[in-house]
Length: 370
Image 1: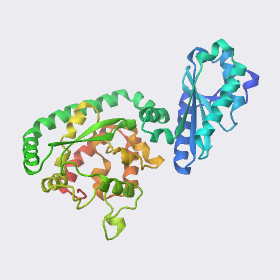
Image 2: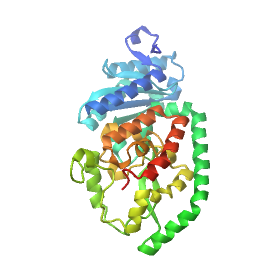
Image 3: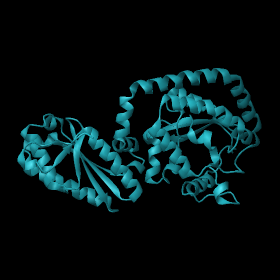
Protein backbone atom coordinates (compact mmCIF):
# COMPACT_ATOMS: atom_id res chain seq x y z
CA UNK A 1 0.00 0.00 0.00
CA UNK A 2 1.26 3.48 -0.87
CA UNK A 3 2.19 5.46 2.23
CA UNK A 4 0.47 8.80 2.81
CA UNK A 5 2.54 11.90 2.21
CA UNK A 6 3.41 13.80 5.41
CA UNK A 7 3.39 17.54 5.78
CA UNK A 8 6.86 18.85 6.49
CA UNK A 9 6.32 21.53 9.19
CA UNK A 10 6.44 20.25 12.75
CA UNK A 11 3.12 21.88 13.56
CA UNK A 12 1.47 19.68 10.96
CA UNK A 13 3.30 16.44 11.64
CA UNK A 14 0.30 14.85 13.39
CA UNK A 15 -1.93 15.15 10.33
CA UNK A 16 -1.33 12.94 7.30
CA UNK A 17 -2.36 14.16 3.86
CA UNK A 18 -3.10 11.09 1.76
CA UNK A 19 -2.06 10.76 -1.83
CA UNK A 20 -4.81 10.91 -4.47
CA UNK A 21 -4.70 7.17 -5.07
CA UNK A 22 -4.98 6.34 -1.38
CA UNK A 23 -7.59 9.03 -0.66
CA UNK A 24 -9.87 7.79 -3.47
CA UNK A 25 -9.40 4.26 -2.15
CA UNK A 26 -10.47 5.44 1.30
CA UNK A 27 -13.45 7.25 -0.26
CA UNK A 28 -14.50 3.97 -1.85
CA UNK A 29 -14.16 2.12 1.46
CA UNK A 30 -16.09 4.75 3.41
CA UNK A 31 -18.78 4.88 0.71
CA UNK A 32 -19.34 1.13 1.06
CA UNK A 33 -19.28 1.45 4.86
CA UNK A 34 -21.98 4.12 4.58
CA UNK A 35 -24.05 1.82 2.36
CA UNK A 36 -23.96 -0.91 5.01
CA UNK A 37 -24.41 1.21 8.12
CA UNK A 38 -27.01 3.64 6.81
CA UNK A 39 -24.99 6.55 8.23
CA UNK A 40 -24.12 9.48 6.01
CA UNK A 41 -20.74 10.37 4.59
CA UNK A 42 -19.82 14.02 4.04
CA UNK A 43 -17.10 14.86 1.53
CA UNK A 44 -15.68 18.36 1.64
CA UNK A 45 -13.72 19.55 -1.38
CA UNK A 46 -11.34 22.50 -1.10
CA UNK A 47 -10.61 23.76 -4.58
CA UNK A 48 -7.66 26.18 -4.61
CA UNK A 49 -5.14 25.44 -7.39
CA UNK A 50 -3.22 28.68 -6.83
CA UNK A 51 -2.60 27.87 -3.15
CA UNK A 52 -2.21 24.11 -3.40
CA UNK A 53 0.03 23.85 -6.45
CA UNK A 54 3.18 23.58 -4.32
CA UNK A 55 2.79 21.37 -1.26
CA UNK A 56 5.98 22.86 0.23
CA UNK A 57 4.70 26.45 0.06
CA UNK A 58 3.72 28.22 3.31
CA UNK A 59 0.15 28.76 2.03
CA UNK A 60 -0.31 25.02 1.61
CA UNK A 61 0.83 24.42 5.18
CA UNK A 62 -1.60 27.06 6.44
CA UNK A 63 -4.50 25.43 4.57
CA UNK A 64 -3.71 22.00 6.00
CA UNK A 65 -3.21 23.46 9.49
CA UNK A 66 -6.63 25.10 9.24
CA UNK A 67 -8.19 21.78 8.23
CA UNK A 68 -6.38 20.04 11.07
CA UNK A 69 -7.74 22.51 13.62
CA UNK A 70 -11.32 22.38 12.31
CA UNK A 71 -11.73 18.61 11.81
CA UNK A 72 -11.64 15.52 13.99
CA UNK A 73 -8.58 13.28 14.18
CA UNK A 74 -10.67 10.52 12.62
CA UNK A 75 -11.55 12.62 9.56
CA UNK A 76 -9.46 11.82 6.50
CA UNK A 77 -7.60 14.52 4.58
CA UNK A 78 -6.06 13.87 1.18
CA UNK A 79 -5.68 14.87 -2.44
CA UNK A 80 -8.92 14.51 -4.36
CA UNK A 81 -7.11 15.93 -7.38
CA UNK A 82 -3.37 16.24 -7.15
CA UNK A 83 -2.15 19.81 -6.81
CA UNK A 84 -5.55 21.49 -7.05
CA UNK A 85 -8.28 19.96 -4.85
CA UNK A 86 -7.97 18.71 -1.27
CA UNK A 87 -10.68 16.46 0.14
CA UNK A 88 -11.84 15.78 3.68
CA UNK A 89 -13.96 12.75 4.57
CA UNK A 90 -16.28 13.28 7.53
CA UNK A 91 -17.46 9.77 8.40
CA UNK A 92 -20.14 8.25 10.63
CA UNK A 93 -22.48 11.22 10.30
CA UNK A 94 -26.00 10.83 11.67
CA UNK A 95 -29.37 11.63 10.14
CA UNK A 96 -29.37 15.45 10.52
CA UNK A 97 -27.03 15.86 7.59
CA UNK A 98 -27.64 19.37 6.27
CA UNK A 99 -27.34 21.12 9.65
CA UNK A 100 -24.12 19.21 10.27
CA UNK A 101 -22.79 20.10 6.81
CA UNK A 102 -23.61 23.76 7.49
CA UNK A 103 -21.82 23.61 10.84
CA UNK A 104 -18.78 21.99 9.22
CA UNK A 105 -18.71 24.72 6.59
CA UNK A 106 -18.85 27.46 9.23
CA UNK A 107 -16.09 25.83 11.26
CA UNK A 108 -13.75 25.27 8.29
CA UNK A 109 -14.41 28.71 6.82
CA UNK A 110 -13.72 30.29 10.23
CA UNK A 111 -10.38 28.46 10.51
CA UNK A 112 -9.40 29.44 6.96
CA UNK A 113 -10.28 33.10 7.52
CA UNK A 114 -8.12 33.12 10.63
CA UNK A 115 -5.11 31.54 8.91
CA UNK A 116 -5.17 32.69 5.26
CA UNK A 117 -4.46 36.29 4.18
CA UNK A 118 -7.63 38.07 3.03
CA UNK A 119 -6.43 38.61 -0.59
CA UNK A 120 -6.01 34.85 -0.99
CA UNK A 121 -9.42 33.85 0.38
CA UNK A 122 -11.31 34.35 -2.94
CA UNK A 123 -9.01 31.70 -4.46
CA UNK A 124 -10.52 29.07 -2.14
CA UNK A 125 -13.77 27.35 -3.09
CA UNK A 126 -15.43 25.02 -0.59
CA UNK A 127 -18.14 22.50 -1.46
CA UNK A 128 -19.84 19.90 0.73
CA UNK A 129 -21.35 16.69 -0.67
CA UNK A 130 -23.49 14.22 1.26
CA UNK A 131 -23.72 10.52 0.43
CA UNK A 132 -26.18 9.07 -0.41
CA UNK A 133 -28.52 12.09 -0.24
CA UNK A 134 -26.95 14.12 -3.05
CA UNK A 135 -26.98 11.13 -5.40
CA UNK A 136 -30.71 10.67 -4.82
CA UNK A 137 -31.70 14.24 -5.72
CA UNK A 138 -32.96 15.03 -9.21
CA UNK A 139 -30.75 18.10 -9.59
CA UNK A 140 -27.01 17.61 -10.13
CA UNK A 141 -27.40 13.82 -9.75
CA UNK A 142 -24.86 13.18 -12.48
CA UNK A 143 -22.31 15.46 -10.79
CA UNK A 144 -22.85 13.87 -7.38
CA UNK A 145 -22.31 10.37 -8.79
CA UNK A 146 -19.09 11.46 -10.45
CA UNK A 147 -17.86 13.00 -7.19
CA UNK A 148 -18.56 10.02 -4.92
CA UNK A 149 -17.55 7.37 -7.44
CA UNK A 150 -14.35 9.16 -8.42
CA UNK A 151 -12.37 5.95 -7.89
CA UNK A 152 -14.41 4.24 -10.61
CA UNK A 153 -14.17 7.27 -12.89
CA UNK A 154 -10.40 7.24 -12.46
CA UNK A 155 -10.27 3.52 -13.24
CA UNK A 156 -12.34 4.08 -16.39
CA UNK A 157 -10.07 6.92 -17.47
CA UNK A 158 -7.01 4.72 -16.97
CA UNK A 159 -8.60 2.06 -19.18
CA UNK A 160 -9.23 4.43 -22.07
CA UNK A 161 -8.07 1.90 -24.68
CA UNK A 162 -10.45 -0.78 -23.39
CA UNK A 163 -13.33 1.69 -23.26
CA UNK A 164 -12.58 2.79 -26.83
CA UNK A 165 -12.62 -0.86 -27.90
CA UNK A 166 -15.96 -1.36 -26.12
CA UNK A 167 -17.39 1.68 -27.91
CA UNK A 168 -16.18 0.34 -31.26
CA UNK A 169 -17.87 -3.00 -30.56
CA UNK A 170 -21.06 -1.17 -29.56
CA UNK A 171 -21.12 1.03 -32.66
CA UNK A 172 -20.22 -1.73 -35.12
CA UNK A 173 -22.47 -4.30 -33.46
CA UNK A 174 -25.52 -2.02 -33.32
CA UNK A 175 -25.06 -0.97 -36.97
CA UNK A 176 -24.81 -4.57 -38.15
CA UNK A 177 -27.80 -5.68 -36.09
CA UNK A 178 -29.95 -2.75 -37.27
CA UNK A 179 -29.14 -3.61 -40.90
CA UNK A 180 -29.86 -7.33 -40.40
CA UNK A 181 -33.04 -6.78 -38.39
CA UNK A 182 -34.45 -3.93 -40.44
CA UNK A 183 -37.04 -6.07 -42.32
CA UNK A 184 -38.19 -7.55 -39.00
CA UNK A 185 -38.39 -4.05 -37.48
CA UNK A 186 -40.68 -2.96 -40.32
CA UNK A 187 -42.94 -5.99 -39.76
CA UNK A 188 -43.12 -5.34 -36.02
CA UNK A 189 -43.87 -1.66 -36.61
CA UNK A 190 -46.78 -2.58 -38.89
CA UNK A 191 -48.11 -5.13 -36.40
CA UNK A 192 -48.01 -2.59 -33.56
CA UNK A 193 -49.62 0.16 -35.67
CA UNK A 194 -52.40 -2.00 -37.11
CA UNK A 195 -53.49 -3.67 -33.86
CA UNK A 196 -53.72 -0.72 -31.45
CA UNK A 197 -53.86 3.05 -31.46
CA UNK A 198 -50.77 5.01 -30.64
CA UNK A 199 -47.16 5.48 -31.78
CA UNK A 200 -45.01 2.57 -32.89
CA UNK A 201 -42.14 3.51 -30.61
CA UNK A 202 -42.46 3.99 -26.87
CA UNK A 203 -40.18 6.65 -25.43
CA UNK A 204 -39.41 6.68 -21.74
CA UNK A 205 -37.06 8.65 -19.51
CA UNK A 206 -34.47 6.34 -17.98
CA UNK A 207 -31.33 6.94 -15.96
CA UNK A 208 -28.03 6.04 -17.56
CA UNK A 209 -24.45 6.17 -16.35
CA UNK A 210 -24.09 8.21 -13.12
CA UNK A 211 -27.83 8.93 -13.16
CA UNK A 212 -27.84 10.93 -16.38
CA UNK A 213 -31.33 10.91 -17.94
CA UNK A 214 -31.91 9.87 -21.55
CA UNK A 215 -34.79 8.89 -23.85
CA UNK A 216 -35.14 5.09 -23.84
CA UNK A 217 -36.69 3.46 -26.94
CA UNK A 218 -38.82 0.32 -27.25
CA UNK A 219 -41.53 -0.95 -29.55
CA UNK A 220 -44.80 -0.04 -27.87
CA UNK A 221 -46.22 -3.10 -26.14
CA UNK A 222 -48.97 -1.36 -24.14
CA UNK A 223 -52.14 0.46 -24.96
CA UNK A 224 -51.55 4.18 -25.46
CA UNK A 225 -51.92 6.60 -22.53
CA UNK A 226 -52.00 3.95 -19.83
CA UNK A 227 -51.64 4.79 -16.15
CA UNK A 228 -48.27 3.73 -14.71
CA UNK A 229 -49.48 3.72 -11.08
CA UNK A 230 -49.77 -0.08 -11.04
CA UNK A 231 -46.15 -0.42 -12.13
CA UNK A 232 -44.90 2.25 -9.70
CA UNK A 233 -46.42 0.39 -6.78
CA UNK A 234 -45.12 -2.95 -8.01
CA UNK A 235 -41.62 -1.57 -8.64
CA UNK A 236 -41.35 -0.18 -5.10
CA UNK A 237 -42.40 -3.53 -3.64
CA UNK A 238 -40.07 -5.44 -5.93
CA UNK A 239 -37.07 -3.28 -5.08
CA UNK A 240 -37.80 -3.79 -1.39
CA UNK A 241 -38.12 -7.55 -2.12
CA UNK A 242 -41.80 -7.62 -1.13
CA UNK A 243 -43.46 -8.21 -4.50
CA UNK A 244 -44.88 -11.55 -5.58
CA UNK A 245 -47.46 -12.75 -8.06
CA UNK A 246 -48.95 -15.47 -5.90
CA UNK A 247 -47.73 -18.81 -4.63
CA UNK A 248 -44.31 -19.04 -3.09
CA UNK A 249 -42.98 -15.48 -2.84
CA UNK A 250 -39.37 -16.54 -3.27
CA UNK A 251 -39.94 -18.40 -6.52
CA UNK A 252 -42.64 -16.19 -8.01
CA UNK A 253 -41.02 -12.81 -7.53
CA UNK A 254 -40.29 -11.31 -10.95
CA UNK A 255 -38.79 -8.13 -12.35
CA UNK A 256 -41.82 -7.39 -14.54
CA UNK A 257 -45.51 -7.63 -13.81
CA UNK A 258 -47.07 -10.87 -15.03
CA UNK A 259 -50.54 -10.58 -16.61
CA UNK A 260 -50.20 -6.78 -16.84
CA UNK A 261 -53.61 -5.56 -18.12
CA UNK A 262 -51.98 -2.65 -19.94
CA UNK A 263 -50.19 -4.92 -22.45
CA UNK A 264 -51.66 -5.59 -25.90
CA UNK A 265 -51.75 -9.06 -27.44
CA UNK A 266 -49.00 -8.15 -29.88
CA UNK A 267 -47.10 -6.49 -27.02
CA UNK A 268 -47.26 -9.68 -24.97
CA UNK A 269 -45.59 -11.61 -27.78
CA UNK A 270 -42.97 -8.89 -28.26
CA UNK A 271 -42.12 -8.96 -24.56
CA UNK A 272 -41.89 -12.75 -24.31
CA UNK A 273 -39.50 -12.81 -27.26
CA UNK A 274 -37.69 -9.56 -26.25
CA UNK A 275 -38.40 -8.16 -29.72
CA UNK A 276 -39.70 -4.97 -28.12
CA UNK A 277 -36.09 -4.23 -27.11
CA UNK A 278 -34.74 -3.95 -30.68
CA UNK A 279 -35.07 -0.12 -30.95
CA UNK A 280 -32.61 0.17 -28.09
CA UNK A 281 -29.95 -0.53 -30.69
CA UNK A 282 -30.47 3.14 -31.63
CA UNK A 283 -29.64 4.08 -28.03
CA UNK A 284 -26.49 1.97 -28.31
CA UNK A 285 -25.55 3.56 -31.63
CA UNK A 286 -25.97 7.06 -30.14
CA UNK A 287 -23.69 6.15 -27.22
CA UNK A 288 -26.29 6.49 -24.45
CA UNK A 289 -26.28 2.73 -23.91
CA UNK A 290 -23.92 -0.18 -24.51
CA UNK A 291 -24.61 -3.66 -25.86
CA UNK A 292 -23.71 -5.02 -22.41
CA UNK A 293 -24.39 -3.43 -19.04
CA UNK A 294 -26.98 -3.07 -16.27
CA UNK A 295 -30.53 -2.23 -17.30
CA UNK A 296 -31.33 1.50 -16.94
CA UNK A 297 -33.86 2.24 -14.18
CA UNK A 298 -36.87 4.50 -14.32
CA UNK A 299 -36.59 7.64 -12.14
CA UNK A 300 -39.24 6.37 -9.70
CA UNK A 301 -37.45 3.04 -9.47
CA UNK A 302 -34.22 4.83 -8.62
CA UNK A 303 -35.99 6.82 -5.90
CA UNK A 304 -36.73 3.51 -4.15
CA UNK A 305 -33.08 2.39 -4.25
CA UNK A 306 -31.08 1.78 -1.12
CA UNK A 307 -27.64 3.37 -1.03
CA UNK A 308 -25.78 0.21 -2.04
CA UNK A 309 -28.01 -0.24 -5.12
CA UNK A 310 -26.68 2.96 -6.68
CA UNK A 311 -23.34 1.46 -7.69
CA UNK A 312 -24.99 -0.30 -10.63
CA UNK A 313 -25.24 3.11 -12.34
CA UNK A 314 -21.46 3.52 -12.33
CA UNK A 315 -21.24 2.11 -15.87
CA UNK A 316 -23.17 2.69 -19.04
CA UNK A 317 -26.49 0.75 -19.18
CA UNK A 318 -26.79 -2.14 -21.59
CA UNK A 319 -29.13 -3.98 -23.90
CA UNK A 320 -28.13 -7.23 -22.22
CA UNK A 321 -26.18 -8.13 -19.11
CA UNK A 322 -25.27 -10.76 -16.53
CA UNK A 323 -28.69 -10.99 -14.92
CA UNK A 324 -30.43 -11.30 -18.30
CA UNK A 325 -28.38 -14.36 -19.25
CA UNK A 326 -28.37 -15.90 -15.77
CA UNK A 327 -31.85 -15.26 -14.50
CA UNK A 328 -33.75 -12.62 -16.46
CA UNK A 329 -36.97 -11.64 -14.66
CA UNK A 330 -36.89 -14.55 -12.19
CA UNK A 331 -34.25 -13.14 -9.82
CA UNK A 332 -34.85 -10.99 -6.76
CA UNK A 333 -33.88 -7.34 -7.11
CA UNK A 334 -31.02 -7.53 -4.59
CA UNK A 335 -29.59 -10.52 -6.45
CA UNK A 336 -29.88 -8.63 -9.73
CA UNK A 337 -27.98 -5.68 -8.21
CA UNK A 338 -25.27 -8.01 -6.88
CA UNK A 339 -24.83 -9.40 -10.40
CA UNK A 340 -24.58 -5.88 -11.82
CA UNK A 341 -22.06 -4.81 -9.16
CA UNK A 342 -20.04 -7.91 -9.96
CA UNK A 343 -20.05 -6.80 -13.58
CA UNK A 344 -19.00 -3.24 -12.66
CA UNK A 345 -16.06 -4.55 -10.64
CA UNK A 346 -14.93 -7.25 -13.08
CA UNK A 347 -15.69 -5.57 -16.40
CA UNK A 348 -13.52 -6.49 -19.36
CA UNK A 349 -14.03 -6.72 -23.10
CA UNK A 350 -13.80 -10.52 -22.93
CA UNK A 351 -16.57 -10.58 -20.29
CA UNK A 352 -18.78 -8.51 -22.60
CA UNK A 353 -18.16 -10.92 -25.44
CA UNK A 354 -19.03 -13.93 -23.27
CA UNK A 355 -22.30 -12.29 -22.22
CA UNK A 356 -23.13 -11.42 -25.83
CA UNK A 357 -22.53 -15.03 -26.90
CA UNK A 358 -24.88 -16.29 -24.17
CA UNK A 359 -27.64 -13.76 -24.93
CA UNK A 360 -29.25 -15.47 -27.99
CA UNK A 361 -29.81 -18.67 -26.02
CA UNK A 362 -31.37 -16.73 -23.13
CA UNK A 363 -33.65 -14.81 -25.51
CA UNK A 364 -34.70 -17.85 -27.54
CA UNK A 365 -35.32 -19.84 -24.38
CA UNK A 366 -37.67 -17.13 -23.12
CA UNK A 367 -37.30 -18.33 -19.53
CA UNK A 368 -38.11 -15.51 -17.14
CA UNK A 369 -39.34 -13.12 -19.86
CA UNK A 370 -42.69 -11.35 -19.37
